[in-house]
Image (cartoon, rainbow over all chains, first blue to last red; front, side):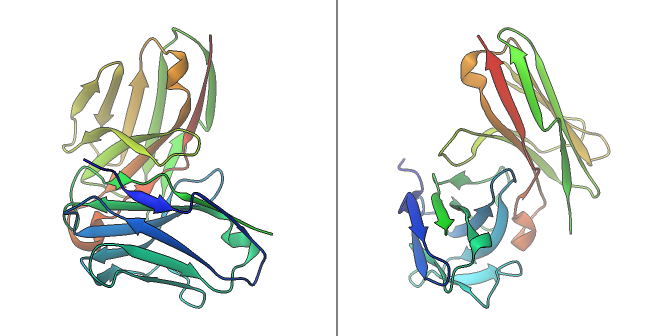
Length: 115
Length: 113
């Protein structure tokens, strides 16, 4: 089966600019996650969707980050305006259902550098 | 919030040596998972553990779910150069938003041929 697709792979922007990332999960996976991975750290959950609804966005900095999954398939994550500390890899993952045991399938990520 | 302590932070070993790394938590998990991440890629699942005390193998990899449900270890036997990468432990609980993975900070493994 095709994996989780993410684009772009790399992005360099200046602080205060805006940026958007795109994710296409594995076909049939109802649950989609966005994780932030800062260099030298493990991934940290930003937001979890079940179909097109938000299940958990408690760790999403809502003053600058937003995410949507309008049709329950693809998702976009946006940062506006970006700060230097947003430099990280943004990973998208999907699973068959909410709280699926055994983990999820991750995409290759988008590496964001804010200068 | 829940935190995972993963050790060691890094290891530099000779090809053929065995490797051991572990992860501890301040609270219990229902599932423990071990992932490997190569440069420029997302984490890939190596082993999933579902039951306290469970010992599971995947080729040269062996992992155990601690009986207290607060720890897990991963062993790699007879390491080879392609084992190089960052290994993450992750804890997971059942259902809803608790299904989210909580990750350790990773163990960076380097293997000298």
